[in-house]
Image (cartoon, rainbow over all chains, first blue to last red):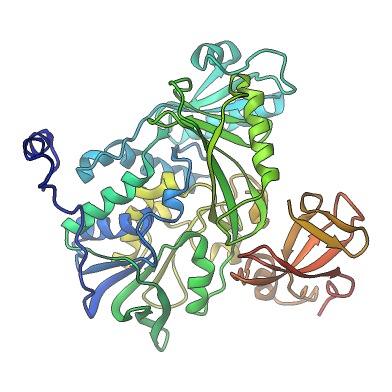
Length: 417
Length: 88
């Protein structure tokens, strides 16, 4: 069923009893042309674009839990493309362009809201670094704008732009085409659109091994039996190292826990995304009124989807430096997601040394914004056994040949990216 | 708050310590480029017990070797890393 104002009216007269399931729940077939391991946003987007752009419809997405239950459902929903290295700039900008038309493309409201992403500067050094970032973005045709302290004061009224904070705000770089989207809707929208094109979404089915013939992958062993596959793509975020190890691969990735928090619902007070420059903190307000906030990693490897309190305290301290008005706001929830932190802070969307096995991993803090772009180029890579122009730098070999894509310049210390 | 039982300082707050990296033998200076690349970039990254180097940078400043479970965060052993960083 196509979602439209007419279907809504029709169902309204039916008492909303006639809505069909958004996606099918099929019995697995014996053989698929492509199996995607991982039913998060990236895996579902990959399956959708395999069917839509490449006509490969005999595809299964195999998910150990429920779709969108990992990092897709745990992030702070920020979408932006303010990257410096050309490889990342072109890739994330393509993803941002896809976001702007995603609801129409999927016939599903992903609630994308280009409300702007504002990065604050608190010192002349930071200002110069943001100027440099802005200039590199503009050279790549990506929008951004420098705002003075006075302009920021008008744009974000409750932000403390005075000289009182320990690190006063001196300006900021805003990307107005960035913003937020509804995380669950992204998973559900891609799942529904992919299912409509013939993709099988198989939930509660954990991949436990790969079936190999020589150096070629020919299927996966799952908790419900063997599935044969022409090609297999891995898109499992924090579990990339574990799944790749089943194929005998050791990855340049460490898994770290990143926490996020939401406050009790408030009246609209922050209508953009603001990030703190003197520490690490980012905040936006959801359509339900909750403030959605995040900070640093916990800085040690962890698969526990839970964090510790010091980072909560540090993040909230930074938040109160920015918005003293929030000092008596109560927190509603706090949770952790496990990040696939790569060694240069950039993703790996690549062929692997094993034939017919493809890897989509290393998203660090930033996987959500990449969802449509990642699916687009990963589908292209799998369908053609060769990368798309936008991911030809995001190889697994770049760590051996020195062509790392290190936006932050932090080196092979994944927790600092 | 998690406590790490530093062999030099006793039980201390985890936030005094900084994670360094997964324990792996440091290659010889003249080892091949592939060996060095694997040492610098590749990680076992297991879910479960993990041998790790930590730096007690707000305490005794010693490098410690821990066996810590990456799923439960439980530390089953903590000792001075002396000797374990030697070239192998």
